[in-house]
Length: 113
Image (cartoon, rainbow, N blue to C red):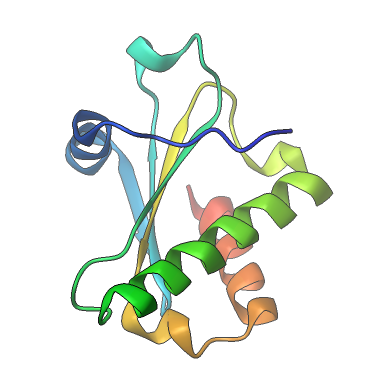
């Protein structure tokens, strides 16, 4: 399954305003059912603000989050609800976290939503 990402700022703002949120040590997860995007199915957005660090660190954080979502989609697609959009917002600790730790935390966040 190809990873379909959110591109428009409007989609990120809607997810922040109306979506359900849960967080942990390394990231914040937002889940939002957008009726306008229902034809596209499952979509993901990745955000890393300047608090994370310079451009190199922000890009690394987004790459790690994309890899995390890709691995979860390959192993178990049932964790995600169809026709929903998910936004992952990185925290500074994501740069030093192990992939296994992030994997478990994301599963816990998805079970809470």
